[in-house]
Image 1 (cartoon, each protein chain N blue to C red):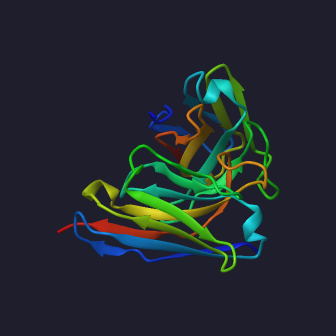
Image 2: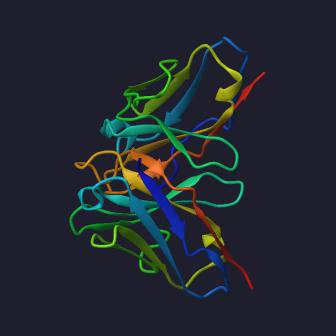
Length: 110
Length: 121
């Protein structure tokens, strides 16, 4: 199972919006609504930010939103803040009854 | 509060074995699937294995046949027996709880702090 494709890095200034893409195939991202997004700060465990494509867990800022079109899922962060600087990973259920993660995207807040 | 505490990591020689454990508290352990996810130094996340809230186990191709996941619901503990270890198995291993009682391979919340496994001679 190949990793989902994410851009290696994205950046934005405080207050701006950024979107991170996550591209898979019809056997994973495109075939199911089981796409999740995680935030990971250096040396810390991953934190769930979005589940089932577009749902936010309680406690996660509404500046974070998720969507999906065909084989590509997206995470949008609006009103960028310094604390958003982190690595972001998408994940998806697959038709092989496995789970696959994206390669990760480093978000830099300029 | 849900807590997951991994243990058992360390230095092991190639071809060796190691057993990881994850002690869970703060929720009805038997009702949720539990998983292991690893992260090699400076690399991304890689799903390793999941044990459902029933008796189903799932593995990544990279560990199939070498790793065995198990759970003891009486002790609220998840385990990962790792055999025939390779240098590429070097990683921080995280224990994670399924987000709902109905999905084994979907979202994980929360994650433990991880335990480092180093495979080297």
